[in-house]
Image (cartoon, rainbow, N blue to C red):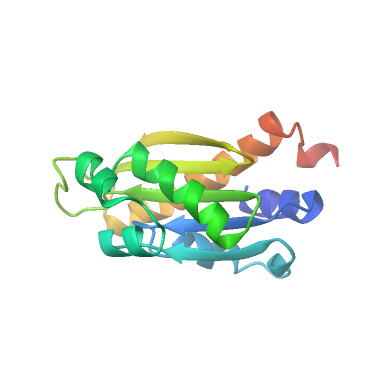
Length: 162
């Protein structure tokens, strides 16, 4: 599926960026493992700490304080704000709790993914199981799944028909 999403981006002429927290740059690293992605992938912001989310990604501290960093509001703001900061057409964001313990009274494995396109942002709530790195890998796989769904449902593009 990863290769299919990469090919969809290559053929679409749309640009992609990411804003990552719990994945710690794993999505960006995965995308960049494919040759030729510089034609569409502009970069990633790894905003692991609340301070970076606030100062660099421009998420209001009041939003962080009210909802916590493991929330759909933060995923939404990460995707929307990073889309603008990275000057891309599509931006995906990842925030959540990869463990090993409860964070903000939110269970290990709880993840929110944001996807910004045009002036819209869609958020996804998921729960994954495993150790930290297993959860992070599953989150990246889910990100690719969401991007594939975006192409087939929103843009009505299916790589199999190209």
